[in-house]
Image (cartoon, rainbow, N blue to C red):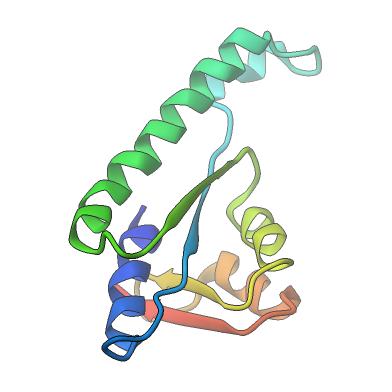
Length: 128
């Protein structure tokens, strides 16, 4: 979750002292494990999907914990979506005032390119 870990740090540096600190939503996209493919095209048992989703929720919570401790004044909402990363970010951006996305490496990559081409809100790209 490098994107999630980077965004609160960038946000806090850009907020003037004494200013109201806006809340933010940390989006985590995930896919079903490859072993779930054995169920396709049949319905996946709900208890299996639920257990996998619980693991993803815990991963996001663990990634955010140090940032919540460092910046307790920032309300961070968790949003775990069973979608591709670009689809999850595009859905989240539909109601966002600003989308902050981390970038690893020198190129933007397919996810970030898709988001930049299709989103309707401003995007800030934060290099790792």
